[in-house]
Image 1 (tube, rainbow, N blue to C red):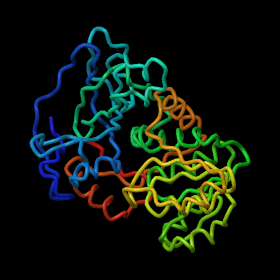
Image 2: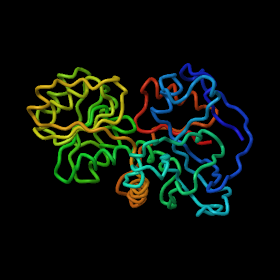
Image 3: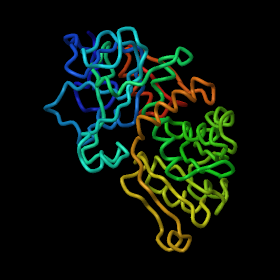
Image 4: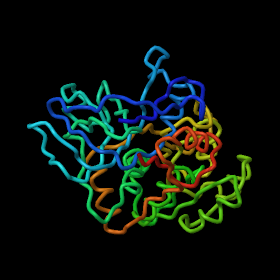
Length: 335
């Protein structure tokens, strides 16, 4: 089979190479799926750029890809899926035996990790992590869900967002940001999304209730309104932490899931504690939440946004487009 592997940790497109590997065979509890689509995530790009401690140079070539969607080719005898099933992988990997796993939720596992291997024509996966896909949902739409939309959904739930709330989402045209805007609407909340591009703002207005265009933190606060939001979804970190804090009301909750804009949370302390706000960390979500998102998308509650698709041999180009932030929604490889 063909795979798009990271052969060097130098950034796209040079670090991505199309290779031939042996077709996988299922171990106990596994299924082999013919991959029809696998979305790109910032997590993959960090690995390719050499910014992740997860992969070292001696582990290359490395096949990333967290979110394969496809059709079951074969499965082990103990797998509860059958040949021909349309499925989507939940990337969560948990030990199942630690105190955190027993108490739940699964993304609190002490050794929590993520699946990699979706940028390939076939993938060997844990069968019990497969979610059935209804025919109403395309593979390209489905692959957008497990990381970006699941992360945003879990963040909204963690912030206890309900109908009538106002949610501030900086960087609202990427995967998690746009997902947060759409899913806030599913919950009946008002979304306030930001972008630095007027062209992207035009598209964002089709999804967000309010759009703020700008780069300067002060302009973002002024545009969104100080002390106006009940919650903030922060996938950027850095200076946007303080921006979220200023936009939120007293008692508001900020959920942090990423570090695209900085390695630290830059937050002034006095306004934070005087406003009695909360900052909570969040990683991915749970498999039942993913199954719920699949149902909601299939029912038409929201349409996962796929900006463009790429052939497997153009995976390096896809990552180059992600690196330049030249995307609105998800980028998807279709092997």
